[in-house]
Amino acid sequence: MPERTLNSVPAPLRQYDLPFCSEDESMRAEDRPVRESQQNSQQNKPQQNKHQSKNQQNQQQSNQQSNQKGIVSESILPLQERANSFWLKVRSAHGIVEGKLHLPDKVSTKLFVFQPGFPGRGAADFEALHLRRFLEEGHVVFTPRHNGSRLTGKFSDRYISCPERQELAKRDGQEAIGEDEISPLSIWLDEPLTNMEVLSPCFAETVFYGHSFGGLATMHSACKYFQNNAQGSIKRLVVMAGATGRIRSETDHIVKMWSEHLDTEYIRERVVIGDAANNLETLKAAYKAIHDSAANIPHSVDIIFLHPWGDTADSIDELIGVNEPLEMIMSLGRGTLIVDTTQKANAALEQLAHDMVDLSTEAMLKISNPSWQPPSQIMKLTAAGL
Image (cartoon, rainbow, N blue to C red):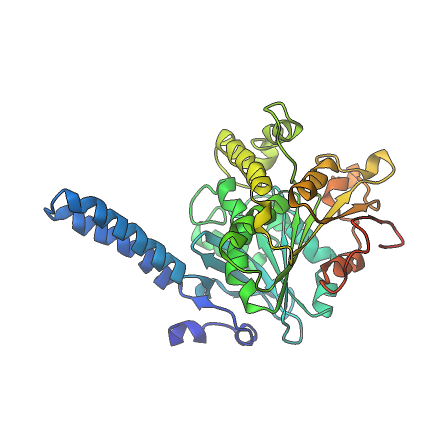
């Protein structure tokens, strides 16, 4: 890494063995194959060499992009909300992820990643409700925001919740997070994968939490990651109110639910994700993939499903049935289901039981601790705890 790149990294981040890269270097690596392609097209080479040249260019581009992974040094913004919190961009061959990295007072070997749902308010909710205690318990915490999240919209304060990043977007004329104007759900599905590849190897223990769509993305990324990688530091995956069911027909509840939610004014005001029909096909393929490839996840990685399903009408998940985590458990042949009876819908606050904002921090911390092993495969979380 160039010295100028290292020097631009704040001292608290340099205490960790994190990979850093330069935005300029990444762009040069991405542009170089294009320039070579243009040069090759201008040369009068025999026809039989064209396919070989194209294959070489594709391989070179893949190799260069894979070498340009890390935290982009130019993206790092120290945050005034608390010391040792930073907005930053993580880059891998799969794309970029932006969000907040929060460091505890003492250097830690534990990483906690919270992957929000759709359209993504959960990251800011986690920071407001749980972050302080997680830092006190010595976790490094990464709370990503989705690609396509609007940076300068009327709901950006609630979803992005980062004045420094929002002000930068206004200055640069950037409407939404991402490298393109539109960030379809195919990009969202790879966000945890980028964090698995770039951040998790830097720690001795990593736990991924995925809420709702974030649960689907976490499982989808894990199936892809473990196809080519050993367990490494990833100890546990926790899926909260996760979208992990099976789609059995075009009239399935899952298809109907997404068809109704993908292209509404509510969604368009918050994220830029493009064509609803294409996104629906992406989702259907992702649901299928997590069941078909479940065996890729090593048995040494704990998988816990936490689902709101209480005893009253206002305490059960309004969007995702408890059958969905059960179906994922059947495909895995293992896993724990914790039925959460503590959630309540609150219409006045526009909160659903599905949002799981009443989940206690102490319960989250316990479930996040790989040293804690569930005593049974099906458990109940009540106001008294686990």
